[in-house]
Image (cartoon, rainbow, N blue to C red; front, top):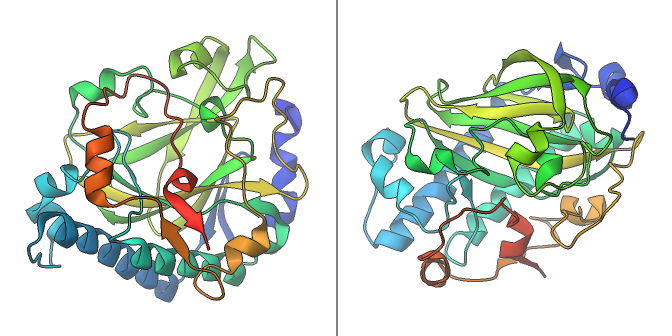
Length: 304
């Protein structure tokens, strides 16, 4: 379904049957209870702390660690400039736990009943301090749709969990486009924005909710010289739509796994990592990150 006029309707089953607390058409929020958010927060803390201790070979205290050890977090090799924090051999056990809890949340909220597929999650650590990397044409501080970086599904689901809420995400609704190629994979975000004629701001990210934003929803990271913000995000495809149809499919387009396979993670299935933190460092140490991101969490894992 590539028609802007009917994008909102593909979430009608979710509107009727899930506990929505916000409905902005192409941007929706589902309530998570205290137990769900606490389990997610603890598992993500464990994932980051395990990575720190494995890479730096020292002990890190849990209390206020995102502030106290900010520079060391930002120095980890498995974090990209856009904040994606990928699993490696040292932290893959903790990553499996996170995915298992995410799966439970998808079931408990009934959201899974109305999806054709959803992806494994990406943990994201975003720095609220502006840097020269924000000038890249593929920086998430620029307005963009994730369809432009290769996503074939309908939307992204994100959950803000830890850190500085002022390091936020701004959501915008596209109201007029110049081209019918809006949902195609683009060379960079600037190329994508050339197709947009009009848009309007919806709101910013709120923590501890499941926030769904359609690929027709432009978004960008907002940095206010704040601290680190930690969130989870992954692509979803609804049963009503079954995803965006790309006119020109290319290799870097992101394709979701079968939904039942994902739901088995942490039960009958355990994901494995493709490399260690040291191997990751050696691979990316000379990367200038000038191109549109085409790496994905699925590139960093193996399905057992």
